[in-house]
Length: 111
Image 1 (cartoon, rainbow, N blue to C red):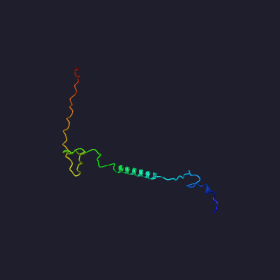
Image 2: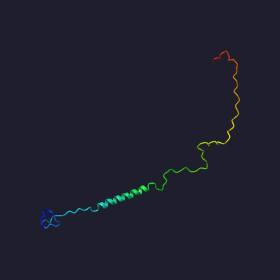
Image 3: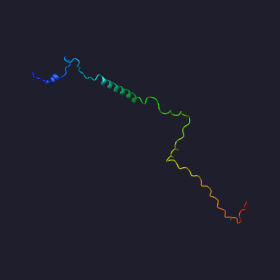
Image 4: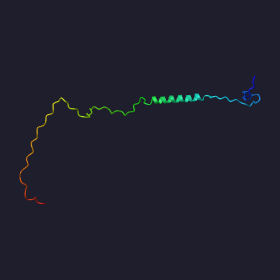
């Protein structure tokens, strides 16, 4: 058997010469499961609100109640291309000719 100097310096789990020595074992506990649970819960709640944001309620304003009157057309109907042209009215009488009487030479009386 060979001599190993590291063997004497390594702490043992139960050291008879030093009864107060403790060995610390590292362990995660359950924090990984706790974080995973919180993430899953957040995804479930977020999915619920994302997919149910529209709902079945109507958010637009209600349309006006129907009436018995027909609404007026927005624009007049286009003329039919094959319809005959409307008849033109008869020409008006010509205007009377200006009178050729000379203008009075005396000015109008002042009032």
